[in-house]
Every structure is written in C-alpha cells, then in structure tokens.
Image 1 (tube, rainbow, N blue to C red):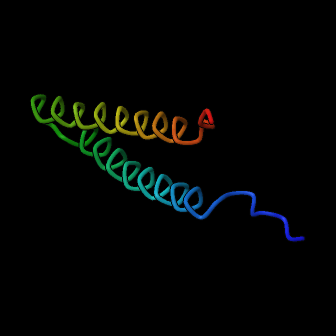
Image 2 (cartoon, rainbow, N blue to C red):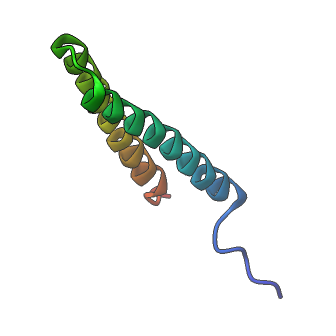
Image 3 (cartoon, helix red, strand yellow):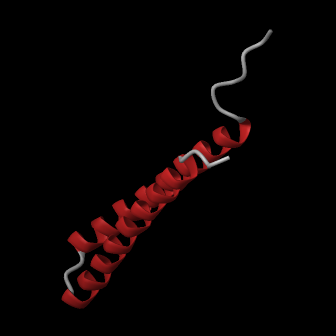
Length: 75
C-alpha cells in the first residue's frame, strides 16, 4: 500500500503561486520604498508612500487569502 502525498498537487500549486505573488509584491514594495527615500519633492514622496502602504496591504491580503485557502473545509 502506498501512502498518499503530504499535500495534493493543487496545494503545491497554490503554495508556488502564493510564493511567486509575494516575491512580486516584495519587489514592488522595495522599489516603492527606494522611491520614497530618494525623491526630493514632497508631493512625489507622498505618492511613493501611498505605493508602499498599498504594497504592504496587498502582502497582508495575500497572506490572509493563503491562510483561508489552507483552512480545512468542513465535510
């Protein structure tokens, strides 16, 4: 008798997708933070700050979705 895999193919795919999404969001966040610190104009710095806040919100939303997706469903 063979043992079932620890995670299903769909679970592995979701894990890979969330990892990829968080990598992309991290790149966006890092670049937004660089802009925020390098820009001289206050208005542009504020706009870059909005990008930073939005990227952080998107990362948090991604983590919440991942947690919901990992929650066992009632049978």
